[in-house]
Amino acid sequence: MNCEVRFQEIYGREAEGVAFAPYRVCPIGAHSDHNLGKITGFAINKGIHIAYSVKNNGIVEMSSLQFAKRAQWHIREIGNKTGDWADYLRGATWALSRAHTLSVGLCGVIEGSLPIGGLSSSAAVVLAFLAALCRVNRIELTPRELIDIAYDGEKNYVGVNIGTLDQSCEVLGKKDHLLYLDCRDDSYELIPTAPSMRPYQIAVFFSGLEHSLAGSKYNMRVDELRAGVYALQAFSGMEYGKFDQANARDVAWDVYQTYKDRLPEPWRKRCEHWYTEFRRVEAGAEAWRRGDLEEYGRLSFESGWSSIHNWESGAPEQIRLYEIMRETDGIYGGRFSGAGFRGCCVALIDPGRADEIRVAVERKYLTSFPEMKGRYSFHLCESADGVRA
Image (cartoon, rainbow, N blue to C red; front, side, top):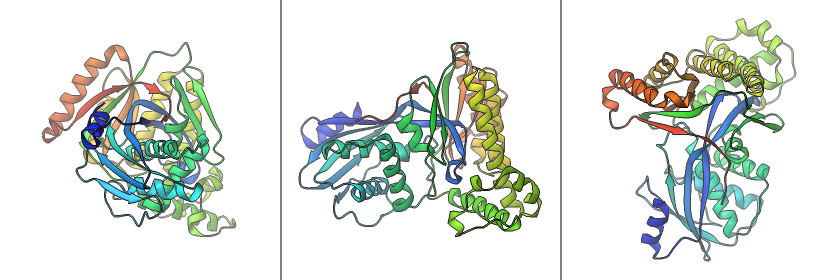
């Protein structure tokens, strides 16, 4: 791997280890986890590799093949975020040090195997880094602890109003299984691919637009949903506490149906997406369990439609990619991936038609956005196991 080569160039020796965290895709369950909903998703066989070695002086020194600036901090003097690419790693160090005593640092080189944007590269970077930092400090975390510490760093240090979808898929994922997760109590099921299911591969259509969750409208959309939930609680006479404690999961579908017309339009739309997505996830899990790939794909397309019209996300490039996917034979279903303001679209496709899908989608997309030539890309992936150090 290139990160191992670069590590040897920088430090004049081989890395002691290589950590890997997969990217994730979430065909159904978008914009749901932060309000304790349900999700379905996969870890995929593309992700983040970190070649690393211990630094006994407590310094963390990280380089990236995608960013020029090297970042440094001490395990006990992390400081505040600086706005650069390494804030997620500082946040991970901060969160791990709150739960465990760190005795050594590390030096490492990060390599991503796909373009940034829409596959939760931030969570994958955090998890791969945590796996390496735990290994050199001889800390053993349970899967739940790893998820919680990664979540803590991204939410409470970096400041993104995320749920646990990304971390859960990238830690709990298992090859040839669909993760079905309830974000209220963290219970989950790994549903195996049924023997009767038609063959599929996971396609990633990268729009050419990179994105940052913290810099997008992601936090605003979450606040709008929470505002709608807060109002529903008041309209219905429910007890409620602080604004940031309001969760859609605590307000029943029937309550939403009764009072939704009293909500301001943006709040109603955010709630409409959340409540209908919750039902789509449940239906999608059942479809996967019985091997009905066509129905699961249909629900994924429906999820994408709701993201455009109810969650009101999607750059024009992403929306066009989604439209092209819907009209392309051999694509069972798909939607935006990630926060849905830039980045990529993902789809479940017929492997036997992968080449014609690649050609057809690229031709139509670059006809609409010729300036993306050389930046747009197509990638075929498989489901995979979760993080490893």
